[in-house]
Image (cartoon, rainbow, N blue to C red):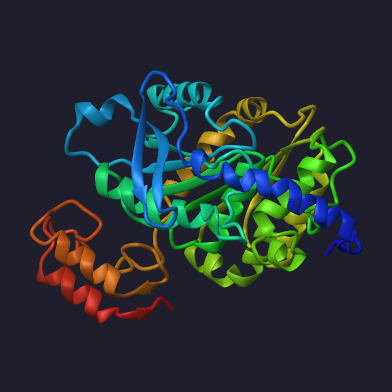
Length: 364
């Protein structure tokens, strides 16, 4: 396990606090972005309980969504990197949409959450920007309630690049009950000391200090507590039990390569099954990384969506047959051809209810 750097000077932390003050004033305004215009992409907003504000997001809907009004679709949550998170949406929507049109992946909904400029997809220590809570507790339920989704773990993948790759790791390892696939591409920051910047980092020192204060309160303990490294340690058994598909991909010329190699070794030590791909000749470029992955990218998504729950009665793949599974049977009562039709007799009925009650408790 790499050793964190020594404690940093009080002067740096005072400077960070001063820089963060101006950032905090503008945080609320960042909950909404300008709409993006792209084929198949819609701009939407919802009322977030955790943010106490209206929050925006974008979605890509495949043509089949309108053409097949009773069909449900899996969902890919794509987490953007730092900076302007909307700039890459048109390219990504075309990239994913083309793959669906070519039959490389099934038609799916792609959700582009608003992660602000430097949220790190983390609940800030100050409480001003509860980003993880907004996405996991507010956005995902909103998407499932307002769109025809496969509203269970086996129908969700979390993916992202750079800050978004780090966020995908945080979300996925923290909540393996929510995602069948966890993809970390060009992920960072995932070093154990945030201020231990890579030699070729393009983040100015003052900005790094500002991010450190605004997200983690300049507190190394909070930084580590919110780190994918720590979540992987805490939740290793749950990730293993869920048979979550996990991958790491990074360019050989990316300044974040070393920290991704460290994280790969950490997952090996935890016996968390995953793939690790270093792409020759590539730097920190999301479109180049995605294209270089080629068919392997689509194979990952397909394998994740095909991952079964360990037990059929565990409908939401949470690792336990519990009230949520019972509620799904009751809500789908009389409906056929769905995950709650556990005995595959064409209708959700007393037989499926008996299966849930007979399997009640943690999945062995």
